[in-house]
Each structure stands twice: as structure tokens, then as C-alpha cells.
Image (tube, rainbow, N blue to C red; front, side, top):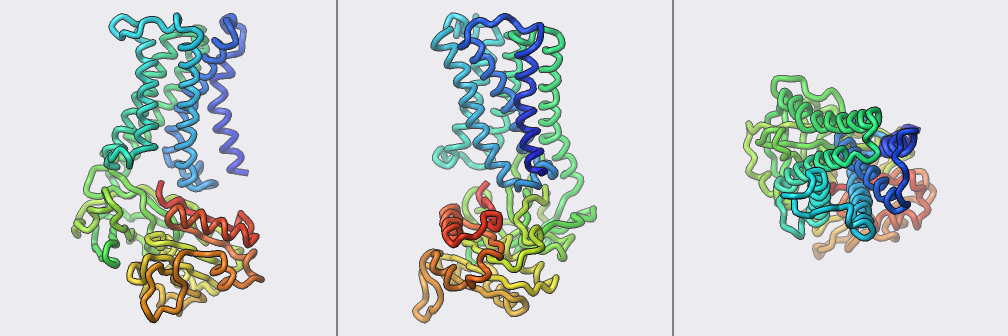
Length: 437
């Protein structure tokens, strides 16, 4: 019900300004269908771009029914949809009403027309640099800063374009409505980019230990400095980490929490060297300053208290939220059965292997390593996760009653979901964490 309510609210926020502008006694006379359609598409796109700021504002109440990874996934595709609308808005005028566009030269063109064109270019650049960041070899921090500048700048230019054109917004009440909507989105930007970093600035953390986990992963142990820290979180959740930088500099990165709630106020994150920021984790020193924004996420066994047992299917560093859950289970004295399918290139790449073996002896856990390069005396599973492995290891009478938690590379998640679907596991029992936001 909460999820339905938030979806309805999103649709209302996107459509309400358009409906108010298009109806009433002070609506300008219709010109042609194409003309009015182009105008409507522009207003709809503007509303969608405005709500984009809310989708990344990380409001706990709004993200809780879905999971913030799904919200960011939605943010990505809604941005593309909004860009398609604004491109259609421009294309209709370019093809059928080109005279209305006026001069292209910004030195002689009306300021609001130049603002509209600049906004379109900013939105195009924001989407292209996001979709092709890796192919363009854009460093994450640089891309994120540019993304914010392009999004905020494009939105401001588009708002100026709409008010400057004045079509549908000449009436005082409708102009006031559009200004109030624009102001609310501006205040949202202020909250996200100014107020929230200020709150984080007052609640710093200090790196108290840097612990190497395997060849290319490190655990950062963070202690609150001058405050009590978090009071609670659910095992399996994640947070945004800003390390050795100001929270205003947009240098934050999302990582799962590998520690369990009973270890608070200490917080641990285990980070694998995968490039850009993660490649510098090994250089972290004890005493370095850090900031946390969280906790977030719904990837936790505690959200399904009536489950008869659990199956964890993870690959590589996807073990981090699962080790948090296993540590919490051991602390709580969990007795329900657990199966852990843990895939890695080789056995030496498995993080927390010794601790997992210890936890398995404390809990009712069956650990099933899957390796691509097996040692000569290996008797376990090799290659990739298959449906046959799941059929062999998970009892048939329990398959539809267990809850499955998947975390790892996208190809592995897709394969695991396909295998579970083939085994008629209910979709509501499959919980997948989109590890790469």
C-alpha cells in the first residue's frame, strides 16, 4: 500500500502542474494540435526533471517500500524518458513551426529561447555522460560533479525558458503555481546539496583500523567522533561513504555494511579494488576522517521474519551484505536453515572464508563454494551457478518456502533469477541487490 501511494504521488506531482495550466478560463486559445502537444510535452518533461531531484534525495520514507537501489534505477530510466519528451517538444517546433523558434544566434535571439536551447543541451549532456561514463573514461568524482552542474543548470535554464515564453503561464495564478513548484524543487536541491552535507559535517567518523581481506580488498573500521553514531540498522543495508574529503564535494560512494548491528557504534565496510575510488582504499590511514550517509536499503533477512529459511547466492565482493547478516544471525542465535552459494574465480578470492566456516559451525548454514579455477583435490562445485546446483543442494520440499538473497555481478544475478524462476520460486521470495548503482 505504501508503494502504491508513493507511485500515485509521483504521478500526481508530474501531472498536476500540466493539468492546472491546460484547464481553466484563462487558457490561451488552441492553435493546432501539434502546437499544443509540443507545449504539453515540454511541461511534462519539466515536471519529470524536477521530480528527479526528489528521487535522489534519499528520503527514508519514500525509499523504504522499494529499496534505494531500485529508486536510483528508476531515476536513470525516467531521466531518459523525460529527455525523450523534451526532444519531442523541440522536434515538433523544428519540423512544423520553425518560424516560432526565431534566431539561433544567442546574441540576437530572445534570452528565454536561448535558455531553452541551453537547457536541452545540458539535459542531453547529463544523460549521455551518465549512460556512457565508462566508455568516455570519466572518473567517477568528476562525472558526479558534472552531473550535478548539468542537472541543476539545465533545470534553472528550462524554468527561465518557460516563464520567459509565458504561454499558459501569463495568468497571475498560474504563474504563481509554476513559480511555487519551481521553488519547491529549488528548496529540495538546497536540502540535498547544502543542508544534508552540513548535517554530515557535524557527525564525522574516524578510521580506527584498516584490515586487509585477501589480495585486493580492505575493511575500514569507522568510529563516530564527537557523537553517538547510529542507533540501529538492519544487517545487509548500505551507506554512502565520504573518505578524506568534505561532504560538500560530492565525493561519496555507496558501500554495503559488513559489520552487524550489535557492533554499533562501530561501523565496518569491506571494499574491493575495482578502480577509481576503490583503487585508493589501500592507502587509507588510521585517523583519516570519514562521513556516512545512511543506512539505506531493504536487502535484509530481518524484513522477512516469517521465512522458514534463507538461501544466499553471492559472487565476489557481493558477500559483504551477507557477512553482515551471518554475523547478526550468530549474535541472535538464529536456528533456521541457511544455504550459502558463494561464487569466485578461485578459492583464494573468497573473502571471509575462515570466518564463514566458523559461523557455519555456530549456525545451521551449509556453505557451497563455486569456483571457476579449482585446485586438483577440489570436490565442490566448479564453473558458474546452475539450476542443477540449486536442485541438488536445496531440498525440493523447502524451495518455495525459503527466501533467496542475491548479490553480485549483474550477469550472475540474471542467471540466478532465471534458475529460481524455472524452479517455480515465488517472485516475492527473491530479493536482489543491484550492487552497481
